[in-house]
Structure formats: C-alpha cells, structure tokens
Image 1 (tube, rainbow, N blue to C red):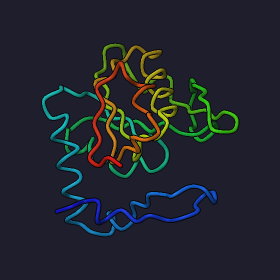
Image 2: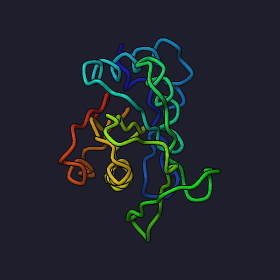
Image 3: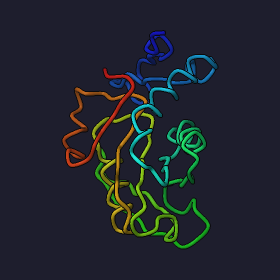
Length: 170
C-alpha cells in the first residue's frame, strides 16, 4: 500500500505560495490509517517508550493511537491558554514572528522516555520547542516521530541531536 496515495495536495492553503499536505484522505481509510500506525509503532517498539506526546492539533490523531498501541500515557502539547492546569511554555520562530507551545508541569516525570509525535516535520521549530519542554521537565526525548517530512525545508537540522523518523518523505 502506497500511503502517499492517501495524502492530498491542496494548492494555496493556507497561503498562496504553500502546497498543503492534507492527511484527511488517509484518516478516512481504515486500512491506510492502520498501515501508517503500524509503521509508526515499528519505528519505536523496542525503544522502551514511557510517554507519547502529541503536538496540537494533527499530532493528536496518531499520537493517541501510538500511546494506546504502546500501552503508555498520552500528553497533549498545545497552543497557549488551551491547557487548564499550570504549564510551562517554549517559544519558536515562524516565517513571520513567533509562536509558543505549552505543556502541563506534571505531564512528564524525571527520566520518562518520551516519544514526540506530530503530523509533519517542516522547518523543525515546533519539534525543537517540544524537545525543549520535555527536557526542562526532566524527560528524555527518545524519538521525534512524524507521519511525513518535508525534507526540502531542512527541519531535521533543528532536531539533529534526536532520533527522527517519518513514514513519508517529500
């Protein structure tokens, strides 16, 4: 099964010069979703993961499934002011300006072996910020794990000190 057949290109979204990689056709197909999950799990099954982080919002889809398959807890990392309890935050650069992500202060324990999952590795800023959050709380980033990587944006450069896996590469 070629999973790239389930990723739809949307020209000009969210901005004119962008080609957005839409994963909703993949999510609509149970066999494609299962195949993708199997590949994500196979990349980490022997790494003794204790916690899975899913990054808002598309990282939640497979992040929760990964946590369930690995029989570990799931932690959401969200945009500012979306989590109800006390948080810490990390700021990262965007093409124009900055953005921030937050995590509950009690979500990661010292020594937790953390898998960070998001839908896409683009410029790497989001992933680097999440790695920072995990380490500030005392966790160990075991792998940064993605459904797809846009390799032409060189996102791996920002997370080069971490094991990185993507099911699909563009």
